[in-house]
Image (cartoon, rainbow, N blue to C red):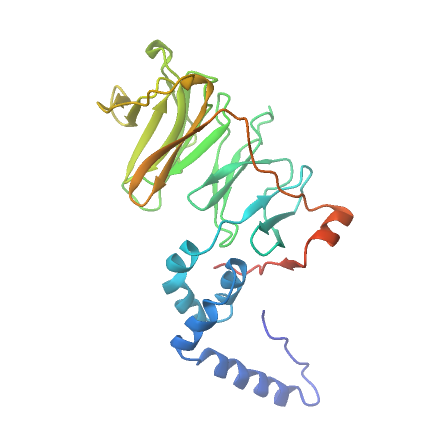
Length: 294
């Protein structure tokens, strides 16, 4: 959204002066008017709006939490052989947005945690098969080495003393009796095995500064990475559900509470894929996200 610069000849100086005056006028719009404009935008347009200038960015940041809470989520679409581009699909206005992100080539999207896309390939046996966490809007990246054992899910937790440090937890639901964790400043992973406990970890979530685990027996515990035993089961009433171990459970945070969702994998959502003629026929437009960071 940057203004084009004129050539250094002819009327270029006059043109630049006019462009500079226009830019100054736009940046001086009152905050009340900017808020009215923001409330009429979609999620992607909101992020692009924040890249125009510092005053607009300040207003957008102040309204970010309230604005995002009032809008539905975007569906992330990553082609199987993606090398540079991925897509975000808005299911409410039927629009598709394309953006370029790093570390797409050779990787898969393993999930989404704390605002970061998790990019990696747990099936690769190459040394380069590391885990990259990329914020699709700020372009901020976090890099972690490849875990030594198999994994399928990861979560990011900011539990270290320093705000700049984070901990990544990798695990496999109902497949392997261990989980792995690695600090953002560490070169090696720590493996926690719990085979002697006769249960498996179904899900892991961060809630109010603590890491919680859900077991295959319907029990809830806390994960303490600096003490032993590292998993301490809580004395709470656990779910009495038939075929609990056959269901796929997830812990969800909603309005200050921890909720549990379970399903038997008998239903799901399907979304269109951004490919070929189908994409041109079924989507109104394909918008390109700005490269600037929000």
